[in-house]
Image (tube, rainbow, N blue to C red; front, top):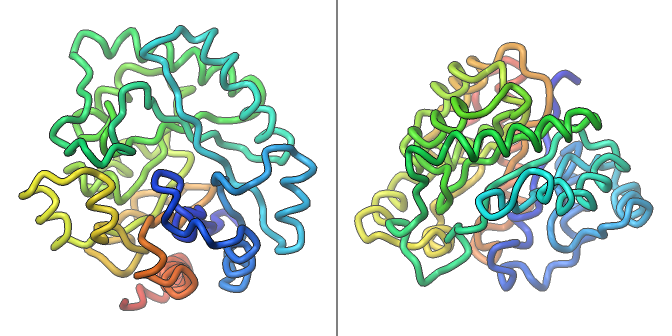
Length: 296
């Protein structure tokens, strides 16, 4: 298929707050994903990190390894040091046939700290983007030479959160740096996901599809919540259950080839992962097949 639908396991077992879904076995996540019709999974903290073991875990369920998150520290080290730190993750992705590497600068991020409201998130000075962009481009060129495309994940609570941040990132980097379009982080960060898709479609090589509940977002912004407090309150959900127009987003990506990843972190005790991921899969499948969106 030109476009395949997969998921991130964060809806079953959260990586940033591991007590959410901590009791859920990896096998449950994979079995439920396969039963829905998802074609692949991104990595999470419960996955094996050795190629043979990872393939053995996925094979019984017919799931591909899509990619996996990498926490970068390019604000603290140069490109050569980052490539060395990245090596085990890159080698794992290559061994299991993943074509993209999810990359985000996290050396000063606050998204995992419930004590810090998003108003305290790090902001990169205007004059610092050029140096950061050169380092990031060098790392992306290195991974591209090995057949894996680096896709940058803009994320709440990090230096690339707002629409202006995304534009600064893209302007400061070369075409080796791909953009991971995350609809939920874009919307919450103040950007129109469809407009981002239109502007950067030539550099979008991976898409995370999460929806946003506008009432929770309004509360989170009015009361200056932390990222994790907003997640616990249900700011994110699956496509078709929030305010984002996914038909408009997909319309702006007419030549996209790759994965649409359902990555809607919720408390699995409140939002049954099987039911919600089935809803998201149905919504995206309907849009891709041209039958129109299925109402939530």
